[in-house]
Image (cartoon, rainbow, N blue to C red):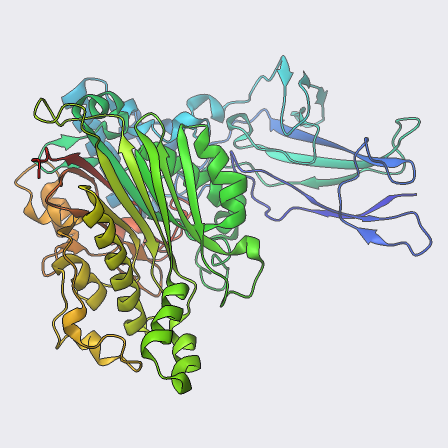
Amino acid sequence: MLSVLRVHLPSDIPIVGCELTPYVLLRRPNKDKSVISEDVSESAPIDGYFLRYKWYRIQSDKKVAICSIHPSEQATLQCLGCVKAKIPVSKSYHCSPKCFSDAWQHHRVLHERAASAVNENGNGEEEIFGQFNSTGSGVSNASLASSQSSGSLANGNTPLYPAAITQRNGGETWFEVGRSKTYTPTADDIGHALKFECVVVDAETKLPVGPSSTILTSRVIPAPCPTPRRMFSVSGVDIPGHLDLDGRLSSSGTFTVLSYNILSDAYATNELYSYCPSWALSWTYRRQNLLREIVGYRADIVCLQEVQSNHFEEFFAPELDKHGYQALFKRKTAEVFSGSINNIDGCATFFRRDRFSHVKKYEVEFNKAAQSLTDAVVPIAQKKTALNRLVKDNVALIVVLEAKFSNQGVDNPGKRQLVCVANTHVNVQQELRDVKLWQVHTLLKGLEKIAASADIPMLVCGDFNSMPGSAPHTLLALGKVDPMHQDLVVDPLGILRPASKLTHQLPLVSAYSSFARMGVGLGLEQQRRRMDPNTNEPLFTNCTRDFIGTHDYIFYSADSLTVESLLELLEEESLRKDTALPSPEWSSDHIALLAEFRCKPRTRR
């Protein structure tokens, strides 16, 4: 007879919105008693047996509140200031006085923003604080009370079915909440334990055979969500409702661009990020948290880096399609990569179909450029050594889009508004400074050809793995590199010589340098303190326990685009320096950059 050997969950802490899929180990009823882990459904039984699953929510008469800072802990105190300010109740709970004291500097921002929202918009706090909770993964007041589930329920891929309730001793009630192997906790489950039950069933009689195997989880916690980041206008006007700008954007002819390295699951290891709780590092949790964040920004163009091939096909493309985005992807090449081809990451660009249409796509494979370069300039005897240094699998995805809006005015009636968007991820190895610079230069030369063939604004986004002031950043920002730049000292293949060739004619400017040029306004001084006064770039876009610095940029062609507003930067202290990124709140080791642009009216050539 088919028998269950073991049942366990990858993570003991269940989180709202994150799938729970138990690992079930089975012994087959054959001579060699082979062990399998595949699902055995009623439609495909093995030797006349299949598995039946049930999930229960165990509710106590005692109401439970969850700490907003340590969501696996029960709350013991509540901030009355949050209650008075009508801040979502979930953010008001803390597990201890020390917890509240440690979090105060970050927590008081909630009070300040609530007060600001009331002053500016009347009862506007929901507009600010309700943005990430609106997906259903957030917490409401009702989630802390015993849920009186009734009617029909569904979870997983099973049909709707009536809720089953079994009363237990000790004031506990068991609600049946799922009948598939996978269950996704909901807001109703917060503060309650879940029970998974698996039993072997006779396919003919439909009766259980043998004892059931069960798992009891810890209490379900809400998906931790950070305080939403605001947009700041370059004119100095604060825009607290930036995530509800759809009407303003469509009428004004502006558009927004997001660039974000989301941290590939293949790189999100416990060894590298030991300070991040394992449940918050799991892909089932991070993918939902990342999606909630990305969708919440409502950007017109989204450039993501470190997107795994399988995650693009199975998750990001279909999920963002539901929100009106068309998807394009360029996977890294695989000459160096040795793992599963499904796990290799790449660059993904999404755009809103109601705002743009796809005109053309270019794929840049730096490995191909390396082959051409070595064939042309490297002696045969050094070719293998040169390729070993240059071939690193990095790519760039270039997309030409046509805007479905226009602000060209009567001077250019009917003129097509095109935008060229480059999305790249430059080599990470810090000792290969020559390779980084060569990759950036190669990309810029390709963009120059596109610019020469069309009157088109340029956006260059991505993770350049290069600090402000480095040779790659200098080339992007200034159009040339000083021959005496220290990065040019590392050039064993001679690919950077002469230094006079390291130029480009694109009038590129870093979008975030606009913060340094802004006037006086609410919050702008705080943003300027998060900028490096020497480079006019953010102090950091990448923050781990071992490294903090800026690697991510959005560059734009200043002759054809102007920056209207920028997403606020984060401060190092707010990221809880003792944990850094990723964290339960932020699911990448990078932060997202978002800029709003307006196309300048172009004169005819």
